[in-house]
Each structure stands twice: as structure tokens, then as C-alpha cells.
Amino acid sequence: VNEAMCAMTGQTRAALGSTDWLLHVTHPEDIDDDDVFAQLVAGTLKSDERQKRVLRADGSVRWILRSLSALRDAGGAASSVFCQVVDITEQKQHEEELKAQVHDVAWIARIRDALDRDRFVLYSQPIVDLRTGDTVQQELLLRMRNEDESLIAPDDFLPVAERHGLISGIDRWVIGQAVGLAAKGQPTQFNLSSASIGDPDILRELASAIKRTEADPSLLVVEVTETAIMTQLD
Image 1 (cartoon, rainbow, N blue to C red):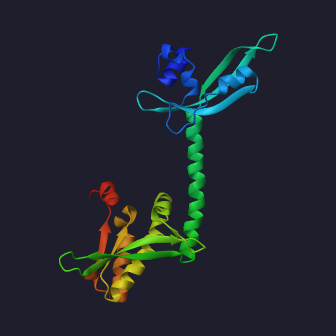
Image 2 (image 1 turned 90 degrees about the horizontal axis):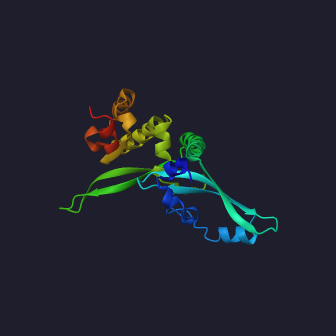
Image 3 (image 1 turned 90 degrees about the vertical axis):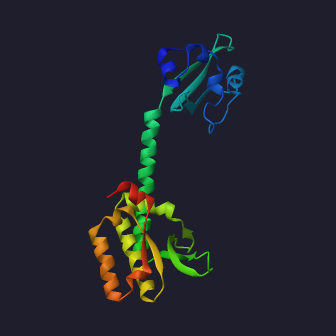
């Protein structure tokens, strides 16, 4: 046990002198492997290599690659077990970044396809006056449809759309639907993304849609989300 291992795990030499930390999880999502040493000594396992997470005392997490091999004497008996621990935290972070990029690329294609094929849908959530029981407003909730007509929740696609500049196209579609409902005399409330709230082009398009359809603008409520307020205080 050297100083580098102490620094990596955030533990003392004395704490690392036991094999317990090599076998038992220090992160709640990892799996224990109690029988590894027994299998190495018995010869049923020649070596063992696996990735594990070390949960340090300060709450930070380090990824390690832990390799175990049995060292045998001339008679074939296991005299000791050699262990090598390598810090692979940066490698894992890079892997996660690549996974996120691949995830986003796939969703970008799906969002563009949904825009091209009109596979977005709005659900109306009634807003009720508790004093009278009357529905006085409706909030439009956005969903995306799969090719099999199953619904995709906004948390699955909106963050990707916001990160990659597709959100304005979605907001324009929502504006068209909301203004169309207002033109039919239906009070309507809808969300605009934080990117669109401060976009003069989007706001001009909203005004143009109201003028074109002769919708009563008093029937429209644009909800400014908490995210928009936090990112654009002005």
C-alpha cells in the first residue's frame, strides 16, 4: 500500500492494510465479490479484473480497475495474492461524455423527424377555479409520439432539443397550436423555453400569429418557466 493509493481512496495505510475494502463495496450501486480470494487460492479462478467505485470520506467517487492474481509456489499452492489498483476515473468520465454524445445524436434525429412528420401532440390540462368549480383555463402539455404512437415524455427530448438548437422549432409549433385554440375562443396557457422567451424572432412570430388568426390575445397566457427566470433575470 503506497501513498498514491491512500490519496486515491482517501483512506489511511492502516485502513487499506485489510483486504476488506478490495472485496466489499464502498459504493451502494456496486456488487460485493466475497468469494474471489477463495477462488483464487483454490485455483478455480486464475485472475480477476473488474471496475469498482470507491466512495471516499469527502463524498467524492473514484473509479478503479482492480486486478487480482494468485502467486503460486513451485508446488502450485497459492502463496499470496497480488493486487493492482489503477485509477480510471478520467477514462470513465470520457466514456460517459461519449455516451452522452451518442445519446444526443440519436435524439436529434428523432426530434427532427417528429418535426418533419408532425409527431408532436399537446394535452390539455384543465385549470379550475376552486371557488366555482369552473374550468377557466387550459395548460398545454407537450408530448412526442413514437412511430408506434406511444408517447414520449418531455424530459426525454426537450433537454436535447435545448442543447442543440432545436427548441425554437418546437416552440414555433406550440405557438401555432396555442394561437389556433385562442382563435376558436378557448383560453389557453402554454410554455416557452428559456431560449425562446428572450428571442425577438419568436416573440414577433407570436404577435404575427395572433394578428393573422385574429385571436384574442387576452385568451393567451405564456408561462415563463423557473429555468427561464434563473437564466435570464432581466
